[in-house]
Image 1: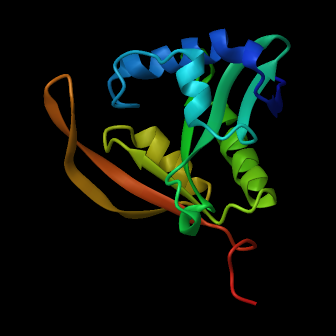
Image 2: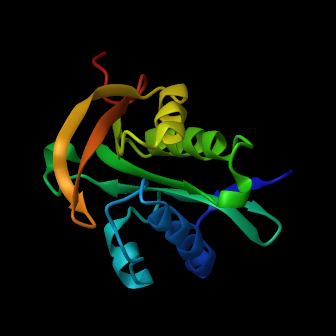
Amino acid sequence: MEYVIDPMAPGDWPQVRSIYVEGISSGHATFETEPPTWERWDSTHLTNCRLVAKAGDVILGWAALSPVSSRSAYSGVAEVSIYVGAGYRGRQIGRALLDALAALSERLGIWTLQAGIFPENRSSLALHKRCGFREIGTRERIGQLNGIWRDVVLLERRSRVVGIDP
């Protein structure tokens, strides 16, 4: 299947939201139980770090970054969100999106990407590790989803070009 990686546009939201709903429904992708409105989602993600994988007019997956803090010391640290539509998994789309997002983030001066992933989401853990993330540790019983305490594996990817000492 041929596809391109493009910047996400506001008009992409209905398909992006639909893919996000699939992730929510899985019970292993996010603590969210309902998809946000476009306005809420838009306000919490970096406007210049949003990508979609498209085949024609069909969005196959998406990736975006959120700031981890408003403090200037953390201006180069962002959290990854990445979702691939259920019918398109296993085709290296996640890898293409995550690699493109990492390259874009470095062009924008971001030195650390982090991800928090449920340990049951083995495919996402493997994807992040293939894309240069390393496991930092597990945050045990960090939050509840549908009344059940869940652990989250924390991973990070440090840039080799941004934020390094000369």
